[in-house]
Structures are given as C-alpha cells and as structure tokens.
Image 1 (tube, one colour):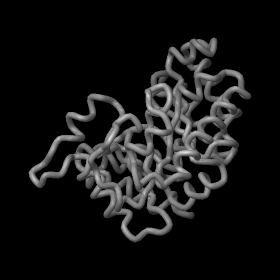
Image 2 (cartoon, rainbow, N blue to C red; image 1 turned 30 degrees about the vertical axis):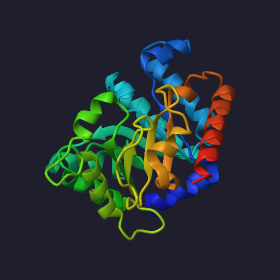
Image 3 (cartoon, rainbow, N blue to C red; image 1 turned 180 degrees about the vertical axis):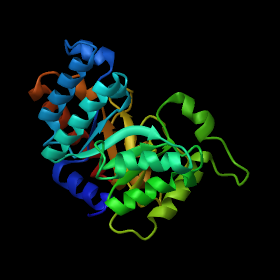
Length: 278
C-alpha cells in the first residue's frame, strides 16, 4: 500500500486542504433537531458522510462522541468509517491514545491493522508517556500505509502548562516532540506519514518546524476562534504541510446537505487563499 503521506498529498491536491470533524456532541445534535441518543448520532453521521464524504480530503470522527453510547455507538462509528472509505475520504480517527508496551500495541492493532473493524487511515496519539512509547503505532502505520498525528501544541488553554514547559536542555516539551517526529520522517519523500497536531489558536509557537517533513494538523479553526489567516502566524514557513481542520464551523450549517457542502467549500477557499501565499 502507498504511504499515508503520499495518499494525503494526493487527496489534498484533488479535494483541497481541508479536514472536517464528525463531532456529534449533544448541543450540535439538538441544533439539528436530533435526539441525544444512538439514533441521533447515526442520523447525524450519515448526513455528514452523504454530504461531504465524496468532497472532503480528510474526515475526522471524534471517537468519544460515539463511544459514549457503548457498543451501539461503536457500531455506528464502524459503519461511518466504512461509508467514508466507500466515498473516497481519508479517515482520521480522533482518539488521542497513548500508553506503553502491549497496551499501545493493542491500540495500534485496533486502528491501524486492516483486519480491524475500526481500521482507519490515521489516528491521533498522545506522546506524554514519551514519544518512544508510541513506537508500536509508528511501526504498524508504516507496515500498512497508515498515519499517526502526535499531539505537540494543542488548542486547549490547559495544554500550555505541560507543552511549553522547558526541559534541562532548554527545549520545550513541544519542541522535544517535534524533534523526535522529525527524526522519524527524515529522508522520506514526498512527505512523511507521522504528523503533528498544532492548534490554530496557539499563536506564535516559538518552535522550529522546519525539519518535520510530515503533515501538520491544525484544529481550532472556526468556532474555537481561529481563522485561516491565523495559520500564517502559527506555522510560518511550514504552511505547505498544514492540514486545516474544522468541525462546528462546518457542521453548524447542517442538517441541510447543500448548506454543509457550501460551508465546506468556503472553508477550502479560505484555506487555499492562505496556503497559496506560502
């Protein structure tokens, strides 16, 4: 199988630089006139898939909003992943998993092994048990053409107390994560498959992203307060590697499919205008 980096570049080239979340939280379900139960989640997810699955480069279901309904919710997630694959979107599952040893290996098998019912193209992962603890994820991703997006500087305000903390060598925790991921992607062409998550709301990072050679997922656009123009401030010369991510800004236009498509098209146009200047 082709690497995730290659497939992501092609998807962005063909469909535009956009990742849209599927985040069926209670307030959004209510605004769509849907019940806060597994039936509401199923209708919500199916509507987003039908509207955007053949249009958006990457779709990012948030696993927690499905898991909260137990096995029935996970079954909806499995179905959503299958439907997205049928429509040609790359599927990035937002699970932010992180652990050690056999446990992280089991997480890797759950999401990055093609035999799994929740197999996806890429996952988000937490490195705060040490980047090296994620090695089984990186290895299985490489084996099956998958990707991993590792948290570095997240858009939530609480993250800074850990991620911007400075170690004995003077580097921030975020820079340490960035440097270790850069080593994993070194020499890969045209783009590595191990990416980073850096929030569009974080402002000037003070970090060196020049050697990452992997995709940079930028959540926080739209309802969380960041605009496409903010990407210049956050990413600077690394803009060409950025994958902008929207959730509520696009999903809030639903449940009308045409309105969802129009919102996604606006987001793509805004991001193209910024990324084209890089």
